[in-house]
Amino acid sequence: AVEAAMRAYARRFGEDEELWGLVGMLHDLDYERYPDLETGHPRMALEELRKQGFSEEFVRAVASHADFLEVSRDSPMEKTLFAVDELSGFVMACAFVRPEGIHGMTPKSVKKKMKTPAFAAAVNRDELREGAEKLGVDFDEHVTLVIAALEERAGELGLEGRAAA
Image 1 (cartoon, one colour):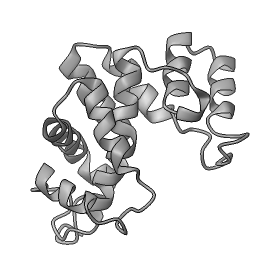
Image 2 (image 1 turned 90 degrees about the vertical axis):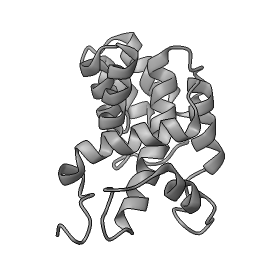
Image 3 (image 1 turned 180 degrees about the vertical axis):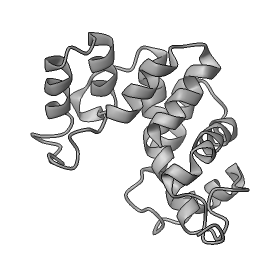
Image 4 (image 1 turned 180 degrees about the horizontal axis):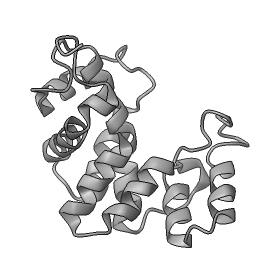
């Protein structure tokens, strides 16, 4: 999902879609194995990316998505990764509870779910808005772009809804 959103923003900003897409795909590559934020994620990923020869621009973008590493978000790619990371998951959660999945989803429906603290409770709502703000994009426009990016990959992401199942 994050890969799809990163690719959509790369197209919008006229950036390297492959690079941005890979950053989105690989930014959490170590999370399942090393979920401990004190010693694990994303430190193990950063080490592996360097070992595999990824550019410092790439590694820095991955590092910047983790607030606790205190790596500033300076480039458009870094700001975009932060802006789409949690929002992509939140939009997916919204789609999972809708009979039609992601199809027909609007920013209004996402914002309504944001007002329900028990829904996807681990997602920091302030960070969702902060991401769009730091990116310089209107929040509704940001949500619309992420929904559209995920909808393009709905089948692959399991977002088609119960009607399609």
